[in-house]
Image 1 (spheres, helix red, strand yellow):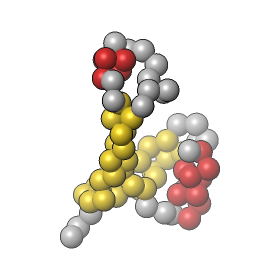
Image 2 (cartoon, rainbow, N blue to C red):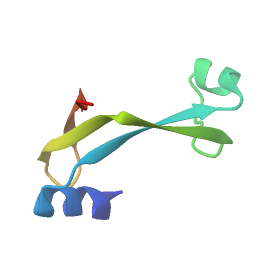
Image 3 (spheres, one colour):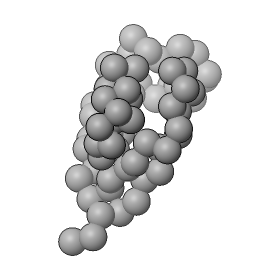
Image 4 (cartoon, rainbow, N blue to C red):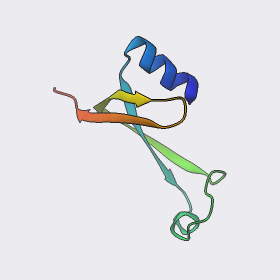
Length: 68
């Protein structure tokens, strides 16, 4: 992910919003680590983001609905 954020920063590339939804919500709702849990992914093509801050660790992306 760091490599992609660096590319977005260095080349002023747009960032797409991808939503990960766990198949088993109980793990997430209980506060346990869900990194290895199966997930489905949905891309929101109507939402574009711009990286406004990235220090190599923390990042901020400003998302806006794209004009159609």
